[in-house]
Image (cartoon, rainbow over all chains, first blue to last red):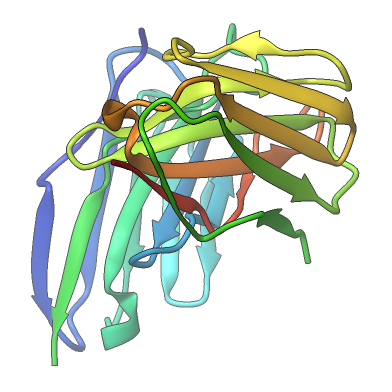
Length: 112
Length: 112
């Protein structure tokens, strides 16, 4: 089936730094979503992208739908301790109805 | 705000027991999904439903069944729990025709 690749598995940054993470696929997706999951909780939707090239912001978060439709990027600026968590990308392709394909996530740690 | 609730946050069951996990959404959404989440494996789709009394198998349906008698409620059933079903179970809802999914807080099930 479809796979979304997120790497590395873990990232460690200093409070105040910016961080960028990406998500890639071997096939085209029509929709890209970014979620954050806090420990012991369900994922929370951060940003949804629907058009190739689209750039969308949500506070300190900015995400882009890659031009090739095979990738997406999430940037977090001026990180703070509460940014700690697991960041998942998810994509929807043409044949999947409302089903999503999820990446395995990147665990972000922020050092104060 | 969208709201998805799950009946239990933590559950401990014995091998062979029949287990019911309940999920309720207040968004009047057509689509509902059950996932399990395991370290290193990410989110895996168990079953989903696009309408009342309708269900479709996801990627890992073996050992599970579902019930959707009302639009707002989607139940996951473990007919005979086994230790390899120890996991975090996440329910999600989404509107028909769009791809954003909203997750509940999760149920951490331990089967001993």
